[in-house]
Image (cartoon, rainbow, N blue to C red; front, side):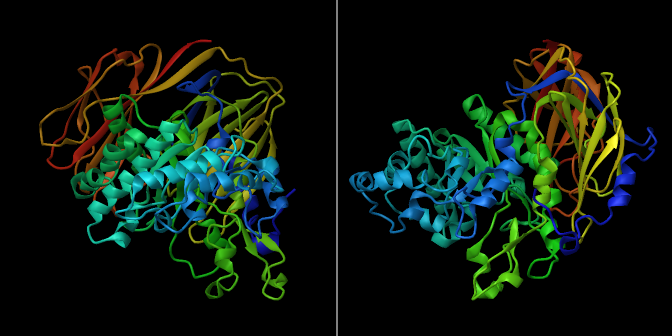
Length: 619
């Protein structure tokens, strides 16, 4: 069992206070109400079971580095159920010479040795194909180069230098290329387009050969789609989708809280990332009749305000965002290929740099134990607070149950695995929230509850607790940005009697300019109808202070737009860009449903309307 040293890491401080809050008496009038129906199995499209391989990953390869030992891999896989999601080791890293590229015959001669090198690795039993291979633009892209020959070389590499057993499932030719366009010339618009053509050439060649590896792109580091009246969208993501989208298998994006490489200090988790992804999905639907899947090949936080070097507080600062984004992405499982939290393992390239004095890379799971350094060599490592993300999600699995929260700032997922039920809650607010859990099904007596909690006070180290209590916990107070996993151990499984299928329906109208008093209509075809519930997802790009509360009708019936949305108010941004969720009764929907919104003021755009239905039927 992996354990933290309590004195060294100070991760158990505040235990008594937090555990006492679990059973605190709360006022139902002020509580967020979470309704749970364990008898209703929820599906996202055709998927019900939590796919841990899509979400619970580490940004690393299982073969690791000189410091990443077999016992480390064993710990992550066997103890924590973590997958190895992404690593930098592409064809263009293998050969950095630029064009002309090695011939097919050259790779064929090298292939027998290369094919088996990974399989003979000590950690080969932990191999997974569900991982992304990527590369720095400076190694992969040559402006003005022969992109067709580069694509031939990349396809040769994946075809010949891997076996079917160890070939990665995903290939992202470049990591965050567009923010590096200036490295390749002054005309950045032309460079971005050529980068897109380079990725398109690779996608075409992989498709032509029938290589199972799926090509992803463009790997957006700065998805501020709303800037310049959506000029950022038009000149970057839309351009990429127009040039290369037909030839890639997934659209890759890196949503970070904070400033990733450039741009504003955004808190993307919550409404902003939902608006970004809805825009990509909607435009994909308009172009191809259905969206391309999403690949979230990095996500997390870029915290500020900490001194250089490791501290428990700085190592904890990423955790809130990792959970906020994970909770949100889990509601798109059927449209996501993979999501990789930006957590790395051990980084000799960083701590060996004399300027870094054996300090860990800021997102590493382990840090060098400086007391054990001998002759400049690290002989032992200590865990960092990043492990708390995996502690929280350890063992969480099962089929989804129907769950809804009365406040958009409270994310909730429920999974049932036989006699175990996992109720997963996340508070996006900067204030504590009282939560009341209401079960539609009667739970038998004799139940015990395991309560796992992870919170990170501002500027302080993470507080993680793991406690067993008697009975079913139905009232809980969540600290600001806290994530909680309640595990009920039942006496017997709850019988599933109802199936509820969640389906997004997209409009072919998007990026509609807002003019005061003028209705904007959105039409949805082939809308699932029947008993259940629905949510209208309205995404807006508007200047701060402009109305976010239009008059709204659905098939002619008026509905009120809420004053709240997931995440913060975006007051620090030059433009609000976010999704506001509007609950609707399912009975208002028709196979062809029309939504109309009318704003009282000019300016900005309704970027998308997405109608999400959750229609129930007997199992």
